Length: 210
Image (cartoon, rainbow, N blue to C red; front, side, top):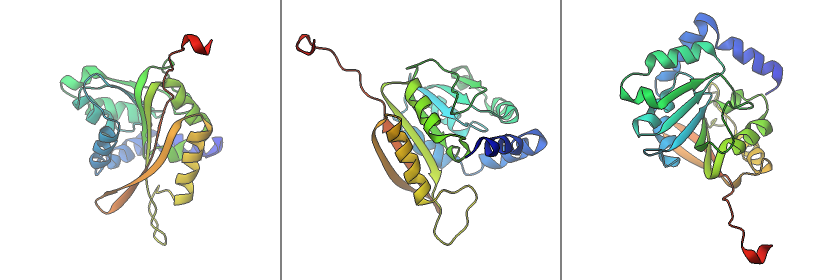
């Protein structure tokens, strides 16, 4: 996506229209949110960043499992809606932040899992987004990018083609992420394509290496 497209996307999720779109995004998002949390091995104490978190469905799923979660979202309307929908004891484990994949407002090596659920198609710069994901992941951390897969011959709003999914995987490899793979998961009547990768493990330097 170009910078011009990114600006158009910002307008797409602004104002009253942004709130309305956010509410429509809640319906049916829970199965994909549970999938991401399962694939990320989210448990108590896991530190997670959700890139393009929208109304926060996957953020709240991770927090219910005991994770400390950062929801990064460029739309002020989406962040307000996410905060309004976040209740109960899990709220103290959740922080919503203004930002985007290409400029994640977190320190280096600060999270165990970084995911983007149905939001990578909005990224203005795939290589920059994956470079930022690598930066914020701790050694051995896990990256997950899930997008609905387009069925050939059938139009689906915001679905990705196989070629686009392959391009995401290539961008992850080029950013230096390791063990990059693409898996497909059936969720009801749709198929979720998930690009998964890991950050390089820290290596203990031995005397023989010096």
